[in-house]
Amino acid sequence: MALIVHKYGGTSMGSTERIRNVAKRVAKWVRAGHQMVVVPSAMSGETNRLLGLAKELAPSQASAAYGRELDMLAATGEQASSALLALALQAEGVEAVSYAGWQVQVLTDSSYTKARIEHIDDKRVRADLDAGKVVVITGFQGVDDAGNITTLGRGGSDTSAVAVAAALKAAECLIYTDVDGVYTTDPRVEPDARRLKTVSFEEMLEMASLGSKVLQIRSVEFAGKYKVPLRVLSSFTPWDIDIQEEASSGTLITFEEDENMEQAVVSGIAFNRDEAKISVLGVPDKPGIAYQILGAVADANIEVDVIIQNLSKNGMTDFSFTVHRNDYNKTIDLLNGKVLPELGASTVEGDAKICKVSIVGIGMRSHVGVASKMFRVLSEEGINIQMISTSEIKTSVVIDEKYMELAVRALHKAFDLDQNAA
Ligand code: ASP
Ligand code: MG
Image (cartoon, rainbow, N blue to C red; front, side, top):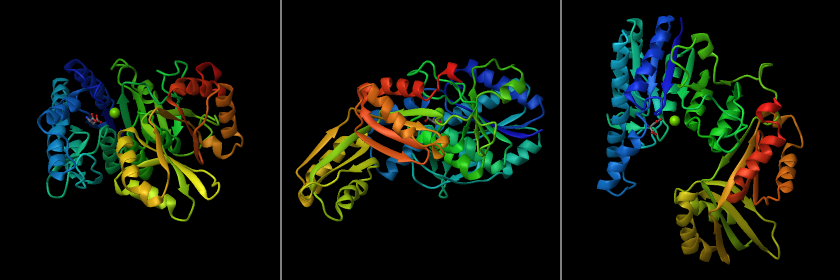
């Protein structure tokens, strides 16, 4: 007998039929003798629907008063799905009770729409588990210390589930979703992508931050901090498949490099079309220019990703960086309006049609020539690299958006990630 946390995403909770399936699956785990906590997302489309209603009535604003009401509203999606699941469990003959975040409590800070979990009180949940009940806890939401309902950012139910698992010291947190695990790359771009049986926590963290949408990045950070055993698996297998088979399916996120780990140098290819490139040209090269440019950008609350500064020529240099596409126009305006005249730089140029393609693998630590192989593969495809950034376990390049799929497929093949290569 173990304490297990299951998380079900919006698609898995998408209709009463699917909720019934979730209930049957959870009931199977209960009959196998486990103590179960279940964290569902809102039914698919519901969060978008609710936020759409808000937008119709009031233009979005950065104020706390606006954020507070958005959270009050969006949190209802998970409250509904949690109650429905508890009802479905009861209909399966399983004792179940659902709680909203404020009832548990899942305490967060007060940053509406992107709150961070600070503490989870486990008393109420433990008492119910000890009484033999399944406890359903709303994903995505919490409460601040003034009693306001908060939400954790889109996709935040993953983080709720991992945080609940950490607080309860659960034996495992299983994230049931509409894909059957973590893949070497997005199978919609490369049909030969292969499911990874295991992936290290560090690789998962890189992949999540580089654009893989399987897990909310904060959930991976949480899992790393509290060493929560985490598995991503499909909710679309028949609910009555053998429980052992189910428990070992999908992708396990591991914390140690053991001999069972897949030994590939590169484990996955991630990509991201959400960025735009901005270049400040003809900047007088003197101390403080990076700060003058990026400081102004940071003060405007704009996140910067890849950064390069060219060598200077005749005392002048060029400076380029990427931002989220949503911040593209704002950044260009900011630079033209204020920063350019102060710097004495000549022009600002931008390109929103770029993408970032990254290779990720802890094997890169101990192998040389991995990045150069990436560059060779791209050059053989005639793809021009505009920017490069590296860390210990990843290399990213910024290229023209129109070559994204070509780049992903070529790299996937060159690093032997295809299904047949393993
Ligand atoms: N329902 C929320 C969303 O759509 C949270 C989640 O599904 O994880 O973003
Ligand atoms: Mg999700």
